[in-house]
Image (cartoon, rainbow, N blue to C red; front, top):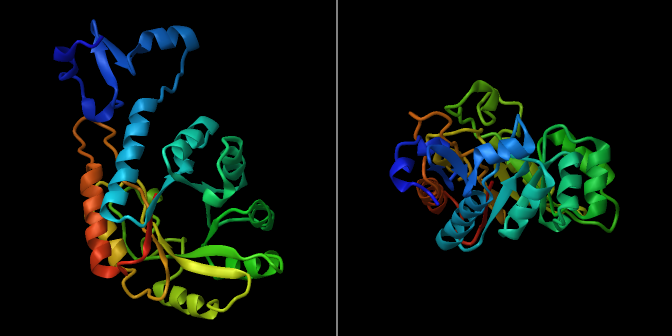
Length: 285
């Protein structure tokens, strides 16, 4: 169907994986974009399902081959709609949700609440209560205030598994609004505070701290910065799980070059082998 000699002339790094040209017209997944526009009108968002699934498999399989005890999370704030949640779950991904709206969308897609990781620095009491009632698998704690509220809201007889977010002090090379792990970021706790809270909650009957979480930002093209975030976790011991975050960048314009999944995973896992326990569970988003 595709005119392969013409495909090479397009800016392939910014187009969907299954895109091509047919008689000079752009195709995605073998469909003429002009036909889709004629059918659905404009503006029109077109998602390349085959390309999405292939990328998800690269991440899931790539992590498992490098670090068997691992999990890949779909960071659903990137595309919070029911079909996307379903595709991610079908490809073996757990789901990162931020807010009750994303929890409800994931539920509508058939996602098991136990496979959800509930993020966010502005969770309401109602959202925490709903997450606990549903059996959301893990809540990522973003502040000491949130610990106090969990202590109040998690009922007797229920054990809520949690991670605590570390602010690693890594200023990501991205737009300032997407820099979430720098020294001035509002997200997470300083390392020494995280270590203290892990110790304080070690014997808590209803809040189980499984490990820590770190996230330095979005649209990051310098993979070395992900390694810096992992280095910052070296002094967190005595925990089972390390969520290394996400934010791998993509090319938005033709002269940008995005890191490959292999480059990204190699960098992360090399840093994990230097800094983290060999038997730990690793998560990426």
